[in-house]
Length: 192
Image (tube, rainbow, N blue to C red; front, top):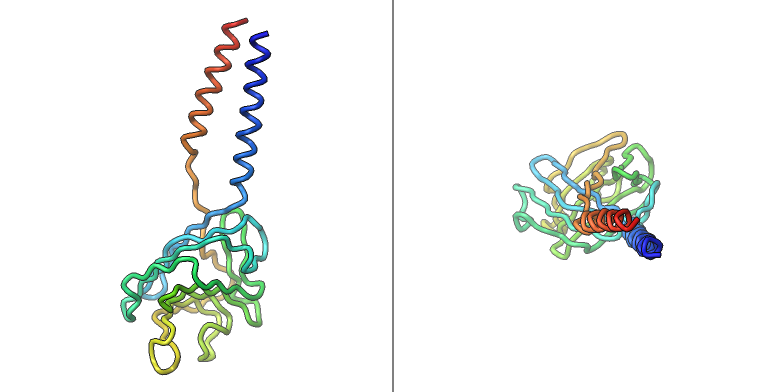
């Protein structure tokens, strides 16, 4: 009788844990760590878990820190979930990486900007109007009379991985659950 009650509690606990894990599994956290000339872009981008080609609506949250020694970016400037523009089919996601295909023709870009006017962009022909294509850049809007000044940029071809899925440690709750589970099994075994 007591063993049956313990088993029911165990099954209820497992079910609740699986429901909680499923609810949190949708968000994928990708770490960004890019070097662009003398500049860097570090931080994270989170998606709603969609795999394949992404749109703006698939991006959940992001925070990036931009550095570029040849421009006043606030040294460094942290930009948080400000303007997000994503157009075209160049950005895609796997369970382990965010990818950008610079060989796709047409207007494709991923543009993430903060209130400071500083932004990071991966593009085929859009972020700067100088005819450059297939570049990744850090820029400050309105830095000079031409409407903007490129802080740092680099040309790319092919598909690059610009962010990698974060390795998420096993939370303490799982260890606590596991030790409780072992205790329940031991209790049930002893009652037999």
